[in-house]
Length: 360
Image (cartoon, rainbow, N blue to C red; front, side):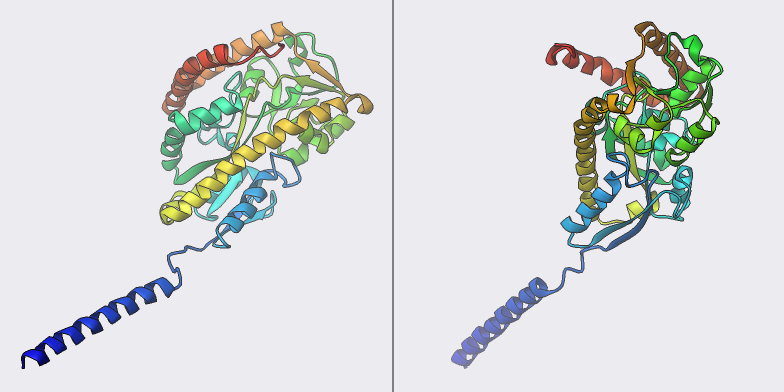
């Protein structure tokens, strides 16, 4: 009896061990059903033919599909194919679409503080904005602000300063812009309105025709490379610098908040990493490509010009007035504006001591 009991116990333990190993193997061999499938339709605000500005979203989508083994797929739709470029946020907010890729400055009529997250006159340079976003409290503030509107924002692209605009004449003073019909966007547009210009906002694809027909007298849109592809240089021959109104231009993947909150952490991490890569890639591409474009201006009869310093000083003064006025009207604008100012005061020390002068 004793031997039988011993044998039975040994056999039982052996069977239990075999069962445990079999169970463990079955788990290891089971398909990774934890891998989440993302299939989003994503409208973009800018044509994918436009370098850095428009081709970043397709680049991110391609990398996400590759890195996720096909689990995360963003189907990119050109401007106007799903919704008009200026209606992307509303479509995402109302969950008509899960996500969109846009310049959020277009939505300042609905959420004034977004202007500070898209481009700021005499504001941060691109790498400074990235530092504030990732390591200041920029991302946190943006998520809180957008969260009130059922949207989750992800920084997913950034480009260096735009040109200050294309003009058919030489600018001697700001008297030259009074009454001028000009395409401008964001806070920079408010500054020019305060100085007497007649400002209108048009999508990139409509600017050439407006210039050609005389509906507008001048226009700004983006980088020299982008503006050239849109044909501005065929109509007006004075391209002004620096891009005082948009010292950085940030681009965001905006996701319906309910959709975002429902994702697994691993999927969120994958999308976040894809957008960080997209941000770095867009800035590198934009920085690399503008010099050759400006070098080619003479062959096209285009003259690159710098705004006179007294003009820039007046624009800077007026910009500060506009920023202070907007902050007085909107609590979120004030909160984000104060955060950016505090960060820049600290960063200015690094910029002052760490970098060579621009003309060195």
